[in-house]
Image (tube, rainbow, N blue to C red):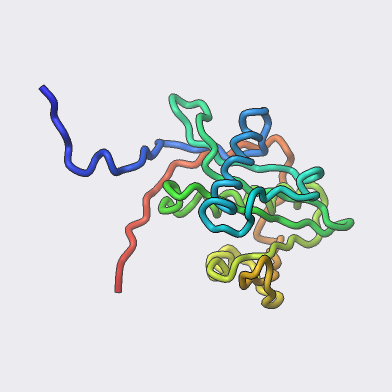
Length: 187
């Protein structure tokens, strides 16, 4: 007997928890790069073949992984940080897998981990070049725009985090995130 539940086959798996931390293992780094490629090359077409650049040689990769039976299973969020000059850190390549964006907190937690980690490593300023459609999201997370610019043919804002809102911590932090799906209202 075969029973088909209407609509179930179209819904992505939503785990009961995620971990957010610095990428520690080869499979986490591979998943981090694969997700960036999927978002920036395949989905958004910002880069033709690869989004990697010279910054990747020194950047610290941060991931969000969904968990199965309490263990990280699949990378669904990524961001990188690096020290651009003494005391000035930058975040870049923030990406969340399309199936996990509606949870609303993965991107915010990646940003929080990125800024708090850099703060713990001595950041006096933390900056990012943010795609224009994400500026309001960053403002809600206590960032301010320093001005508009164009990167890769797309409108961006150079933005700065309010470090007083991001307590410094060490490199060994792991945060557990339990998703709370957002109910979007249409006006």
